Image (cartoon, rainbow, N blue to C red):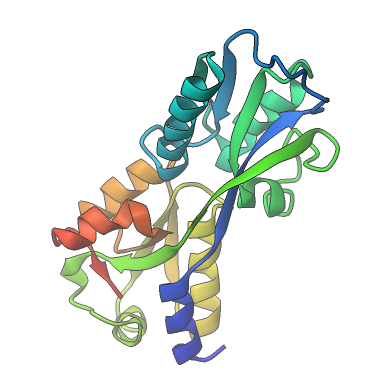
Length: 225
């Protein structure tokens, strides 16, 4: 992959499919739900997945007449919350809002995720797609991917992620591999603290959902490459 191709990759970014899964999903009666439904968010409060889940919960509650209650269970790049749902009773009242990497790539970096995505969970619906963007702290002085690469070859840089194995982490490692540079990976407990750290200049580089980055790009806290 050449630099032009990677530049396009950074702008087009990763397509992250989100879907709600239910452990051992069964045929649901037409009067479902008859009681409140718990929706597990395995990601940090205030992040894009959590924010989207709350919007969906409001619509489901208005449409189906029962509360859909968000329950944040964060840790291990989504594994903690997802494993909780996999171990829950298969009664269709415990759901999880998942980003595709938790089910698709987590079984690779994590030897034991606590669940089998093919046996323990069943997808209900794709609800959203998201693009990602590569951003840098303004103090780096760079405006393009080429300038970032040149800087990284002469100055130690760090890149943030929401956790080990997340799209931000994997994208950063791919960026290093493709360009031949080295950057220190700094994982945080979710995207919100990773964003805060990059805005504060504790880390210099971050690849994250565009929806999360837009306000910071607009007001100059971060710079899009």
